[in-house]
Length: 93
Image (cartoon, rainbow, N blue to C red; front, side, top):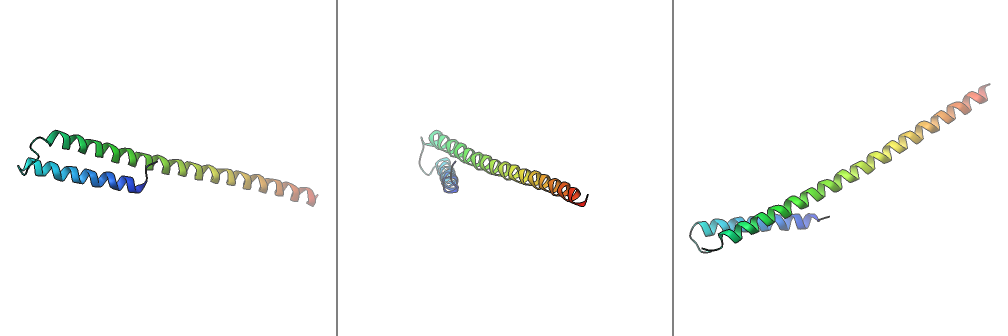
């Protein structure tokens, strides 16, 4: 899984590539760099999207594990209560 630092680095690279692309399009240099800047920009977007996807997948997995633990706990508690009720009923007879 990519860390938040890598996500931020990808976003920073995306911003830098965009700024360079604007500088090149304004005639401030980089006459041949337009295609490579767009390629870098696409790669940065892909990395950012991949990192975001990894983060969401990890969060979803953690949520599924938590819900499974909660279900198991509720089921165990219900079984315990049924057992206690049955024992109480037996003692009353």
